[in-house]
Figure 1 (tube, rainbow, N blue to C red):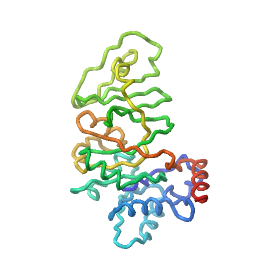
Figure 2 (cartoon, rainbow, N blue to C red; figure 1 turned 60 degrees about the vertical axis):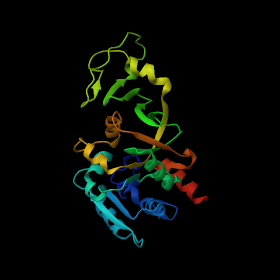
Figure 3 (tube, rainbow, N blue to C red; figure 1 turned 180 degrees about the vertical axis):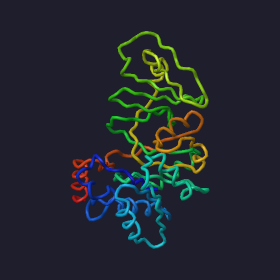
Figure 4 (cartoon, rainbow, N blue to C red; figure 1 turned 30 degrees about the horizontal axis):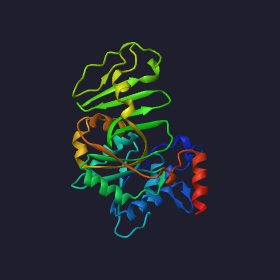
Length: 282
């Protein structure tokens, strides 16, 4: 599945008239580049979700010519559903007995998708996230290759996935100067436990485990088992990140690390210009 429905607000003014997926790098659109990468990896069916400039997108998808490859449209014209909602809406196109790959349309990357799939299959994981060791404002937290949490380094927000099905949320920056002993939130197997309902210092849980976590930036590429659909309780508009963090307590979610030097995000005009320069110099 190619996630291509986004508004591309950071890419304005380009996206005022053109969807992000139809912006060109070199002589090809991002839709063509990503589709060809997936096809080279052995994919035979490609789902593309659409919302922004939906008619342009539908026309472009119908015009893609790749013998033996079937393209499917997941139409979010009425409501943009974010990553999690978009994947859930496309269930009827993705469900089956095979893992499926999800790829953000704004990513250029030389990642070996065949190797990633092999690694995922051998791990027995519910989902495998492509990550790299690069500077970012948001990181997933890993321990021995398993997902343990997420952190926004600029705000200090930290979410920990406890291996009891509990997600504890901690606004780290809000209390970082307070050394008072904290009181953890009450655990629950069904709902996240948030400790920020009262004025409390940062959690002793994060302080205890912080040194054992490895921070890796998510690359916008992931492989999921269809079994995840029965575990998604969220409805409407929601991020797949929140699903991963909720499920990681009871289900193995692993990472696949790749070279960050081959990864380019075209999400802003400046990044798009750099991508075009890099691509044209090859």
